[in-house]
Image (spheres, rainbow, N blue to C red):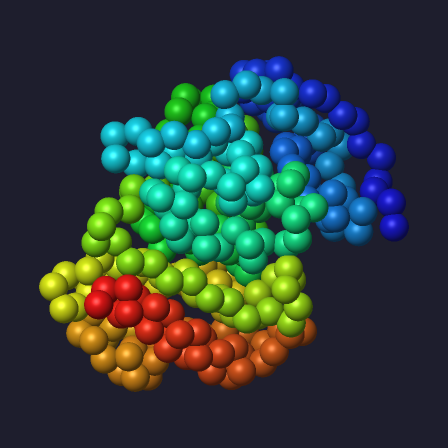
Length: 279
C-alpha cells in the first residue's frame, strides 16, 4: 500500500516545530521514520502534515553531564551502538542495541523516536524504565523533565502533549557497582520481541540492591515486576520467578500463558547475569 496524501514541512527550530504542531492540523513529527513510514504505508496513520525535525541542530549526540549520560533525541541507533560513552556509562543500552531491527533500520532510526513511539515490545522504553531514566521535552510552556515511570501511559501513549517535542533522554551513569542484564525472545532476530527483559541492579556486598526488572512485550507499556525484584534482592531466583506479577494478553505470537512462562525463562537467564557479574 501507499500512504494517504500529506503535506511536508522541514522545521529549522524547535519553535517552528511546535508552531506547526499547534497549527490545527493533524501533524506528526518525522525523525528516523523507521516506525512512522511503515504505519503510513499501511494507512494506520494518516496525518495531514509531516514535520521533519532532522534539520534542527543540537538534538543529537552523547555527553556525560553531572553524573548522568545525556543522549540527544535525534541520535541514531547506530551511533549509540558505536559510542564508547554509551558502552561505558550505559552498558544496558549498549547491550540492547544489536536487538533493535537490522543495521539498515539502526542507521536511520533514532533513540528519541523509539521512546516516543512507545511500542510495548520495543527494547529502549524498557531500558529507560530499568535504569530509572528520564526524558526532556519542550512544549508551549517551556522545558520539562519526565521520569520514565511517569512517561509511558498506555499502548503507544506517552506523557507528551500534542505540541511537545522530546529533546533528550538522561540516564544515571554506571558505576563500578552497577550490574545490568538483558535478554529477549523473538521469532527472528530483528523482530519485535515476544517477551523481553531489561534489568539493572547495584552490587551490595554478596547480594544485590536496587533491583529493577522491566519486562517488555507483556503489557501495554514496559512493566516492572516489583515482587520479583524483592525476591531477587534476597538472592532467591526461583522465588523471583514464582512471584512474577505479570498478566500478558494473548496475541498473534503467543498466548498469555506462554508469554508468562517465557518471562520466567528470561528472568532466570538475566538473574544469572546479574549474580555472576556481582561475584
